Image (cartoon, rainbow, N blue to C red; front, side):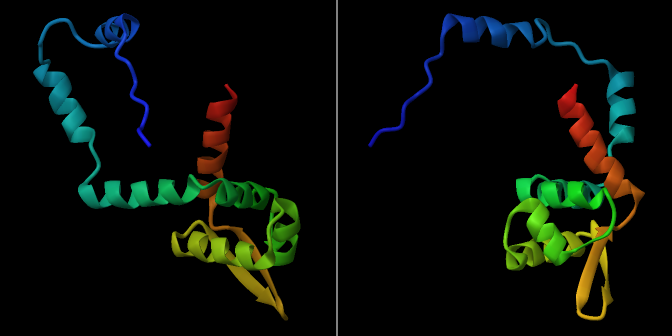
Length: 131
């Protein structure tokens, strides 16, 4: 079975020329300012890993549900529509990346967002796509 290939059309050529510089010119001050603003490599790696975790639809639904407040695994299972086992698996990953925390009350585990940063991350992403 062959993979279909995209045809490079005249429209694609024109579009690719529209969003690039027509001449090579470097602005040293702007380059230096941008380089100075770059986060260190460790920070970039950790932020990338965090965003990959949040990028999963099930985990984003769990985090969104937890924005309303503390919920137990059973409640989250009903809200998101997956098994308690699957919820627990996803929550372990979210906990490992410091997005959620939990407490036990008897035999029930209650989860909540770790802090306001997580809430803001989720809300910002959702707000961005709604605009």
